[in-house]
Length: 308
Image 1 (cartoon, rainbow, N blue to C red):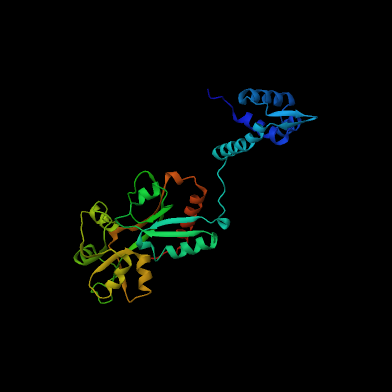
Image 2: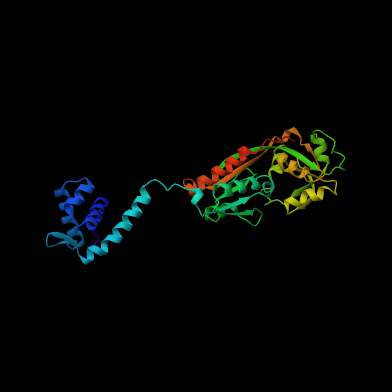
């Protein structure tokens, strides 16, 4: 039959084997000497071994008692890790690998300041960033602990994932300087729907993306003439075509600083484009993940506001 032993008895056993003295063990444990002696007697009954025996004027551990000490320390150490406070994450001393998945529209505007912040705060850590496409199940990757967090701009994440709102961006229409709508301050709904559009390939039929979801809520649909898999190719295509691209004001502003492109505010009905941070419930209390989420949130709050 399995013999029962509790945590208090294990702690007494550890100190007795380390001190080889009932008197010193009682003092360290803040217990009476008779109580420690009684516990030792119970431990002998449970283990079937004397544990400590007399050698002249002192106690010495038996061979089996010596063999017990490492196991007792390991068991008590494991119990302390289970019931104790979680370890504090020290970014400066960490060699962790932070694994992120990011919507490609965030790559140019969000990842550079985030990666720089992680490099400064955790110089010994590694960072791995992967994009999100139709072949990548980000929810399953979070569940399997293959990634730590997801930065995205689509609503309606699976309910078992934790979600935090990072920021909301104005929505603009980016186009080449030759486009007939390039001189407007804001497009009307009619102008927007009459234009030809370019868009990234949808992740799935069920999830066409935040822009088309907003249009669908109003019973509207745009005419997408061109779809591309590589998000950051779109500004280059705009230079030599008459299509327009609907994006965040920050994304448009970044490429306007590099190319002779023009942005025009999208119809007011769009509201804003929201960006989110996703992680799995399993990592909710993990100190490393908590720290990483804090860095991502801090970067989102530090970005200057941009209006289309």
